[in-house]
Length: 107
Image (cartoon, rainbow, N blue to C red; front, side, top):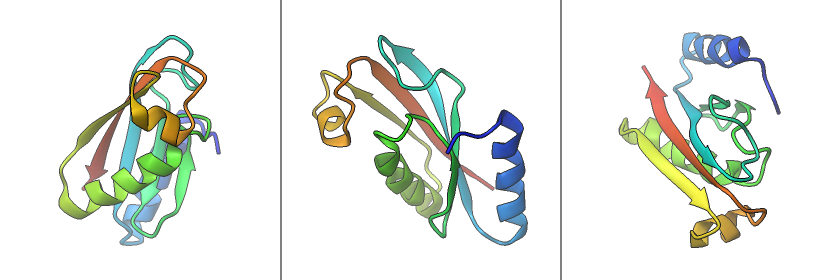
């Protein structure tokens, strides 16, 4: 689900106020045919809810799983998907291009 920039932050604040731990994933670099532009975001709650989009769907399942790990251990991660990366095919990013996504916990 796409969301306005301010909706991501408002959602993160609202979930945090409900004692739901949250992580935010942000597209920080793209090359070639990337599904979403730099700055696109996805907010993920520790209960599995999410709002926003970093890939139009093709790699979001991997990012949500990564975000749950980031919430658990507090360590931010930079993930890269691309045509030369085997994980891109597994995640469905077969259209070409490369995308880097930074995932961080919001405390």
